[in-house]
Length: 293
Ligand code: ADP
Image (cartoon, rainbow, N blue to C red; front, side, top):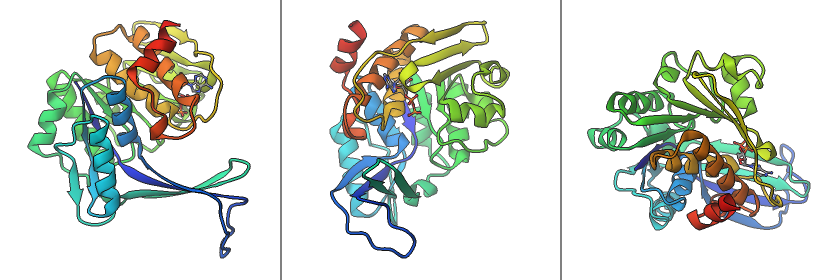
């Protein structure tokens, strides 16, 4: 079982010839509304990858919250303990121009109210094989979840995205850190290629390298490049979320970690073949098909 503790947002995506300048109104093209937020996306990714998945997070009392909750449930995510807090859901207002350039405003809404884990929420963390967290909710909540998981023998994964300054002690509760190059640099304060700077902080690190796959290092001295699956790229949105969700499922299933990373590479690669965000997250058969070659 995988428990994801994180954010849920509604992504409101508007397309236009050019991005509006301050004070300007632009008549745009298409508009798409899609469930998002790293937490919800990774929970959907894990469920689609075939894992029994529980999502802990907070949605608002607005219609976006209703849609987010039903979308998670429809994907097979256990939303029994999903909180509804009075007010707005998290919303990302995304504008994209013809060249693919974007401007994004994230309004955290209910995600900001996700504090002080309840007994039931802690039980979901403690009862999981793997706990998967990101950094789009209050870091005190991330810290508390990781500590509860660690104490109960749940394997803990932190996807340190988006990059933020971390409170002292948070990384002590992490069994496996997943970062891209920007996030690696934010934590080590040095270069992304020097992952050894991270090993004093966490016992295992996976660095995702987009079209180059990923790299795994640990305190036992392993340092392996895990090559990407070669695919035609349509849209790289949500590749990191597909990767993290699949990695959590594979590790929860007891796969050896390097093999789990390879399986997660396949999930990321299937995701980039499709246009879209949470709708592009692959299901287990698609991952298996690419993984098996
Ligand atoms: P993020 O979006 O978090 O920066 P990445 O872009 O590194 O994450 O993508 C996550 C994973 O998805 C990569 O480690 C890789 O396995 C897979 N992936 C991403 N882009 C490609 C690509 N162009 N071809 C094949 N696999 C890809």
